[in-house]
Length: 152
Image (cartoon, rainbow, N blue to C red; front, side, top):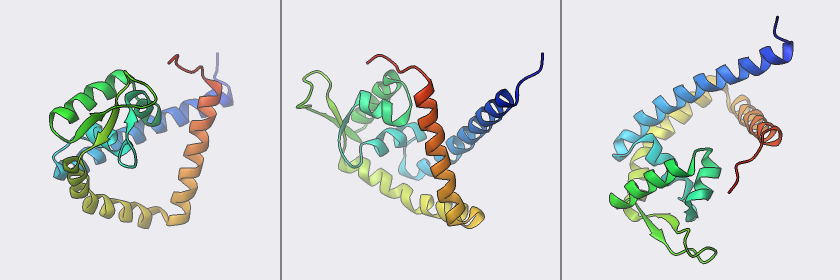
């Protein structure tokens, strides 16, 4: 039995995304090091830089499990990089907020992040990179549309 053209495309996009994920995780670990944090810590801190969010909100935004986010949030709070704040919308679901120490860690990452962003933009071109982001966003939305959602 042979695969359909649709199956081959689906497999190709999945395999490519797995490869990209590995590449981005390796780069993120390297970039996060000057901040004294891991890529996973950076991911959670990055989600709350603009505004505090509950663990479930971070998990949804980042596409990772609530349990993983909770474990990382607890570590970040223990290290003084984040804090739990009261959530006016939900008494038990505290908000995760970045602290000044967390912002400082992110600031130490930014120079290396800027260099990597420039290198990638120079390699692909700004228009092509922007188009890639658009296509990846559309792909993510399409996958959300065709897969069942997790129960809250």
